[in-house]
Image (cartoon, rainbow, N blue to C red; front, top):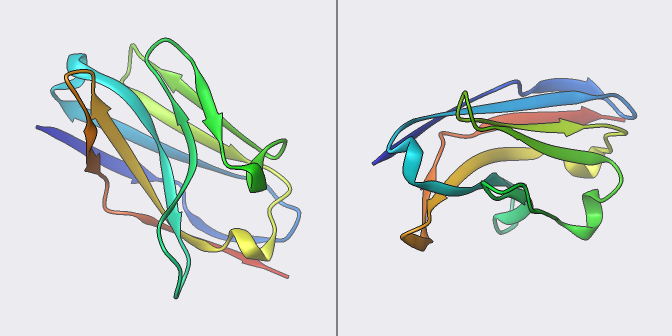
Length: 118
């Protein structure tokens, strides 16, 4: 099992920055990919960004150039630095992790609200 605890959400004005953190515990040495999804009201949960243990990253087109995902393997934490935030970035952001042995199964955090005011 993997447990994920997110922090860093909140209210920010458009154009401002915000950083999310997600700390993993449990089977941490089996984790390969970590990342973030988001879900806005009335919309499906969608991938924002991911990073593998080796450092390969993937971003949604809508956040490229504005968001940066990073990972501290020593502390089993993943970060999402969000810059130039837009009102359409408003959503609940969920951290996830998957194991090398079971890449299709995701462990989820509880979610953190990000609200961008115009």
